Length: 417
Ligand code: ASP
Ligand code: MG
Image (cartoon, rainbow, N blue to C red; front, side, top):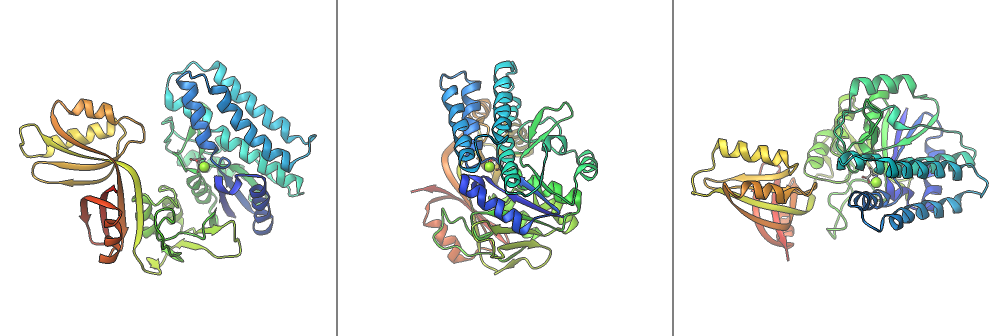
């Protein structure tokens, strides 16, 4: 069985949906399971809805309307007025409205997952119905009945045993299956999610459970490049990457592949192909067992908009184990993800992501006990297989605040000019 994953950019408008349907027909007309994300930037649009709803803002109806119009525009180009898909989509919007009206929970992460999932439910319904319209039989299913997780909303952990049992029992490997990425459910049937950009991981979960022959992630780029073309002028396509190298790259924040995706594939040596949905004839990148990197060149990974903090004791005593363990506990409590750290005798520096907006609370709690220097809005560059020339490219991007060099990896925190 083959697993395909199509991200938001591949289904951002009617033309794109047609293209995806063509690829599925040509490359995966049977024995295929297709994982699809929300259309275009709809997950962001749903996040806007969630924020308005949660904060009881006036503009909620406009934000909902934007999402509804976006999908209906696409549907009007793909379907006839009398096609049943219109009712299916109305039902989904009805369910969303019902949740918004009836929910009383104040737990943000829970509310987030119950709302954000509609992006994927809508997109997969539309693609499935369009394939049907082209005469391509397929099975649509709600992934929440297949992938089971704990209740850690927005970053749920998969229950592998249960998930594998359900998937092997329920998926019909001879068909074209269409389902949602990113979303799942806990044991009380509430929706959970696997973390932003989690659809790749969904594809990995299915591949693992079904012992798939390969996973193909269809993207708007040629494959995995050695740097993000939005940040770097010169980029090169990587033809082959080992699992280990891909895990390293994902760990440092390479956004091409969701960090958790590789491990399940590596365990079963299932190759991961990254191919272009714009040029489906090209081979793209293969992540598999074997040589580290082909071609062997420096790879650049950037994490923008980080916070660099430098923590020292108020009395300038050494930063020792008990301070550190306290600080780490607080970083963990406030969900601040550490992307780089460096220790000296009297100060401890960390570069962090403020994804859950809890930095201020963290800062307030620590400032009584420590002196904390804060640099907001810095960028963290990581170079795998660096050389002097590669480091110099980063040093041109701004003022270097902190550098760390290991055997294969250099990291530089830069305040952009
Ligand atoms: N739609 C979700 C997101 O944008 C999941 C994904 O695209 O992988 O985060
Ligand atoms: Mg998406």
